[in-house]
Length: 577
Image (tube, rainbow, N blue to C red):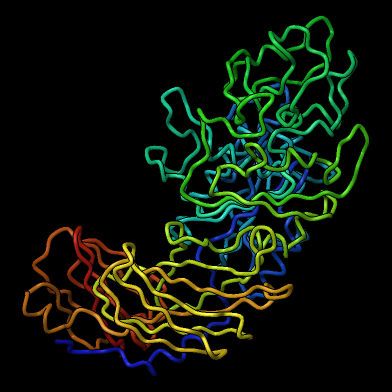
């Protein structure tokens, strides 16, 4: 028997009161060689303003903190917390996004839009007329970039409380993502993961790369071409790692293949007898220059990833490609990366097989970060329940109808929501058009499956659900412009395990209710966690094994207290007077 059912009208103000739209997971944009947080500026500003996703957050990281390009030691080079160099304060870590470095503000907002920045000229204290520190920070080793990305992912997860993140990389930024995902140590433990002990410790829900030289690029100057002083635009650590083949190394055992890309011993590319080379060849950034390196790719003749250090197989990949120019010798691509090297593939099938697809465009390499239309296609919501994006109650989310592989217009988007002790939900879908065909609710084994056709631009569905994860499938027809008008949806829990049932079990009770200053928690349970949330689903506080909550400073309104044990979740509503 239910003692209370949350009345629908109680929640109708939620959609109208939310100025900022929500997406299921934070998006982290990763720039490429010589780039910065501005690489994706146009795309981020479009999402921020047109789709109302809030302000943009940036994470500054220095990758050459000792200002010495002749050495490469991870602990000395990579800094993501404020530090002092030459008596100058260097401000790194969290800040907001702005085109003008003088307008930066410390800290992050509540938005889910994020960008990482390695460019020293965009780091406060590092650039100026009297100081110009950390040369080639944004041209540092890809190994450092993958490590730094892992630190940012951890910061974003801690800040947002999100389950996972979405990663979007341009050019070399895609390799930074792969370095984070693939690199393992001698014990096959992931080197850069947020949680190296878990196969899912990457906490990534989706990856999209644009114009990435996945199997290398020899477009940039190569200092090995002649025994002279290296070209100042081609001798950085990143250029060293990007090359798929060197030009003039006679001491390599087989052929002068790119060592970061395909593996080999670092000493192979050291300078011998005046042969021009790089300031350092320490690819794994440990202070030693004769290590055997495992390449991220399979072998010199393959365009696939290294199966001994594989990509994760629990989310989708999109390789956004472009053919813009033909720059001689049969090279066709975006002006920087040949088309056949912009994606990972096995016999012309995107890899990992079954998890990857491609898009094709015709714009130059330097404009790809601003191509938000293609990027939205690249991060489209999963089309299978096994990789569904997790959403929560009492928030309004947006989703996109975009063309699928080979311009297929039928788009299935899967989301999931955890329904412990929730017996029924109300699902509201808002769309500017009738492109949405139906919404379907199902559980993992399809023993529960209900489909509802969408016949209006705003439709409300109320449905009883089993107390478990529920998958929500939204099917629609994409058009040339459908991505410009994202659909919106929200999910409201309508009824919970009854208060009477909980009291009879002597399990969990709260009093007084309504409350002015303090709420007492009465339970005989041991080892539990209390979560205090607002009506809109915002987490206000997390507590362990407490018997009372101070609510004196909370605004008047409706709140939820959730008690979580190892095996069960209980939810109570209370009113703050």
